[in-house]
Amino acid sequence: GDSVTQMEGPVTLSEEAFLTINCTYTATGYPSLFWYVQYPGEGLQLLLKATKADDKGSNKGFEATYRKETTSFHLEKGSVQVSDSAVYFCALILQGGKLIFGQGTELSVKP
Amino acid sequence: GAVVSQHPSRVICKSGTSVKIECRSLDFQATTMFWYRQFPKQSLMLMATSNEGSKATYEQGVEKDKFLINHASLTLSTLTVTSAHPEDSSFYICSASRTATTGRVYEQYFGPGTRLTVT
Image (spheres, each protein chain N blue to C red):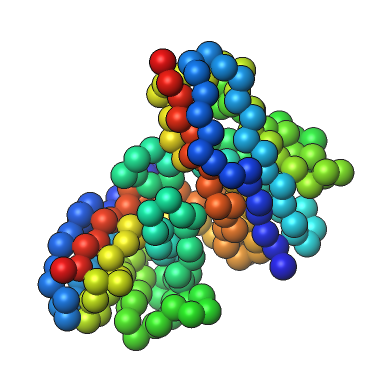
C-alpha cells in the first residue's frame, strides 16, 4: 500500500548547519508530496509541496525536490536557526484527499 | 486565508463523561474535514473523513460509536468523544479542505489541535 518513510530523529544541529531530512515514499501513480512542520503543542503547518516529478517546493529557506526515479522528497535547508526546531512530517496525498504521513522527524537546533 | 480553528484548545474531563471538540473553517467552505489523533512523539493517525451533509467514513479500528463525528455545515465539524476513558487522552487535530466539482480535493488546512486529558 501507499506509505511514507522518514529518517529517524531526533536530529540535533548547531545553528547555521546544513539540514537534510530524508523522505521516501511508496505509492500508486504520482501523488502530490508535502512537508508539514509542527511546533510544540500546535497543529500542522504546510511548509512546502510539489505536485509532479521534478517540481521543487520551497519556503522559508527550505527546499525539497520531487524525485520520481528515487521516489524521494528530501527536505533541505542551507543554514538552520534555533527557531526551526520542530517536528517535520513528510506526506503524500491519495485520491479523495487522504494524507499519508511519515513518522515525523524531530529537529533540535542549538545556539 | 485558509484558517481553521479548534475549540477548546485544552480540555480535562472525568472518566465516563463526553467531550465535544469543534473544528471550524473560518474563511472558506470546507466540503471535507478530517479528524486525526496524535500520541506523544508520534505521527498523526487518521480517524475519520467527513463530508458535509453525509455520514463520516471511519478508518479501520476506530470505534464510530465512541468517536461521533458530525459535519452539519460547510464551516463546522464536531468530534464527540463519548464515555471518555484515560486511554482516550490524546491530541486531536482536525483539518479542512475543499473539493472541486471534478472531485479533486484541495490541500488540507490544519487546526491548532485540542489536548484532551481524561482523569
